[in-house]
Amino acid sequence: MDYFNIWAILAVVTVILLVIYWRRSAVWGGLTAGIIIGLAITLFSGFDWYVVGKGAIIGTMIGFGAELLGEVSDKMRKAKY
Image (cartoon, rainbow, N blue to C red; front, side, top):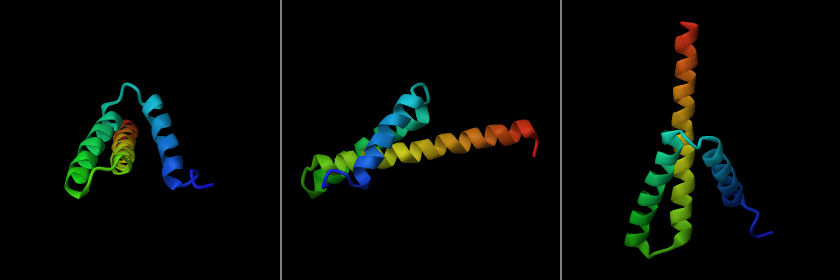
């Protein structure tokens, strides 16, 4: 059961989010930023694809959070709170 850990679950969730938000730039921008930051970290600490993958997952989740904040603010603006 070594392959069934939290990072595997988050990777599946990340792929699902990327498919759902195909046309949204926040999720894809988070993925890109995560890959770039992951590559920068691995250049200084010894190259490892696992770190790049973790960066991509974390970046995508942050982009999804930004996308949710945008959707919530749109709903609040329409409801005139």
